[in-house]
Length: 439
Image: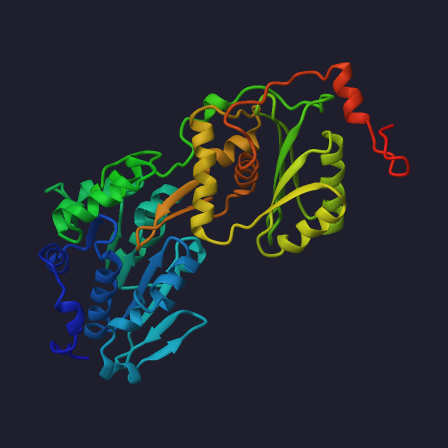
């Protein structure tokens, strides 16, 4: 099919093109690398270039996201970023859409398909002639150079096609390696472009100052917007290892305890942590997996009773709402906490991060706890919202349980004073309703 210059790319896209985007579009090398800051329209450029090629040259084209479900939500369904937005209106009735395979077949026989790097087996055997890899920094962080060296580039060399790699940095990994290849004049097949927030004009100086002012972690902003290589920049609980001390312990008579409980979701587990309020030390830790709600309820109630009728902050989001109500009906001191928005979760996690940073709490040397604290991350969405979560395939239930407990823990431990005889007598005095006297 001949490319119609009046419609490909569509006018909406062409009218907004900036010089740095034109540099990418006109580069002729087989392997092109664009390491651009957050919000620089990388995904839009990848999609439009692929569409142009689909109309021009019959073949198979892949768009690869780090995770297939992530790609589905951004380039398939989101009305602001999906590929259909950039298909010329006069061509839309001529394409065939396969929603189950997330593919589009064009009138000239070209096929565009959405893929995920987390489904590598589906990337073997076929011979695409054009591949766009989005958020390659994230892919390289998770899986190294395997996708590129063992799967994609051998296929492309066989088909005689091309690959574009795009994203923001994610530490010193294969993405930075191939960006450097693109700057090496001896590497004739490679081209690369690095653009920071200062290069593109996407944000005004005032807007960027506001972004930095609201930053929890400046390293992450420097990575996302200035494309600086910052290993561990997206880690939330930096320096938490200084809080790793003490050990689990049995309840102490007269001491009070605060528990945090993150209830299980599908394919997840319930995490239970307990803190001694007189030391702010995590002294109880347990995870429950594949247990019925009734079994979990019995486990939780018996544990709270054992630890001197401890108070517990329980995640009451979704299915947890009715479960926390059942726990309350047993007479236990239950405080439901609904994580009903990203704003609430952000405040929850940031308070926990502050407690760890200032060593207000401590936890014993347990691998499961350390692993979650090490891997818990955040990212900045396209709308500059901070989103906290565990990486794909990892748990975050222990982190959430600790964060819930922090809602009721003081910044400094509450000194323990053993009760004297007068206090014991007063606490045990009961009002005789018949006589009106204490007994």
